[in-house]
Length: 149
Image (cartoon, rainbow, N blue to C red; front, top):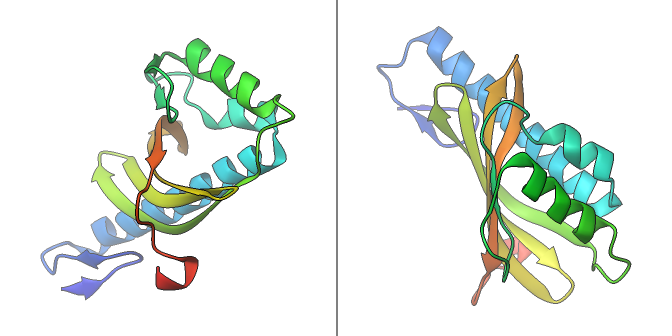
């Protein structure tokens, strides 16, 4: 096994495939950071830019019903980001996982005030860029501290 960008790559993987996986994971890490920057800055336009316009999208906010489709998802983000009572949200402990076929998942912890949630963000390649197709966050009963991940 060779060490890749995140995790391990099988020895049977050729150099070009390994480079693609590592590039995809680097793009996923960047896209995930852009997502949380938009969240922290309450930047609705940036949030809109991150979500796929060509793939079906889904979002599961803690305590909300399932949101399917770009319009429902973006309406939820407009409400969240426009809420002056919305606490600052940051993330830590991100791990990027290749899902193959131009898709990647990022799992991480979200810090929202005193609450910590675990989140999964799934990105798919659209015209050479990774776009968000799924976000799910839920409360974590026993989260690790930032120094533990």
